[in-house]
Image 1 (cartoon, rainbow, N blue to C red):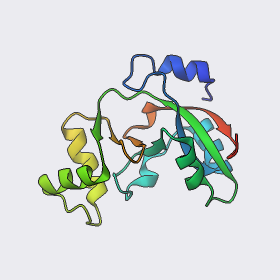
Image 2: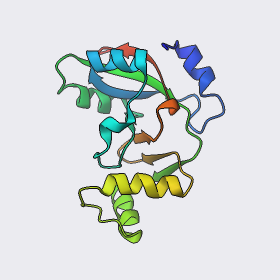
Image 3: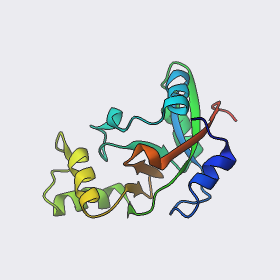
Image 4: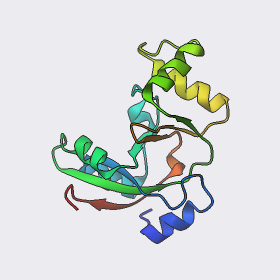
Length: 151
């Protein structure tokens, strides 16, 4: 279902990131699919912070990601996340993994991190200095608009 920004805002009311906009750099076809069919978490299973939907609080970061796509666009969204695990830096996240028996450079480190954090009651992860947020569940993401790179 396609939401308006107001509907996305209402949907995320009371969440940890209420009132904040998030950006996802992608290509036009994927953005259209996300708007009409929803988020596919499994697509990013082997990413740095595990299975999830990756967004940024910074539109410029999303623009850089999108630039490498065939028809680059920025998908705007709100997040319905209640308990994200925040790491001040990427280094802090790597140390957390190591302290919890996860090889931060292993092939499945991101997936293991996701499982560990979910077992601890977290529903997402934020790397503050990188301005990345990862939503663990598709229903946490309320996309509402596709925009161009230079808007």
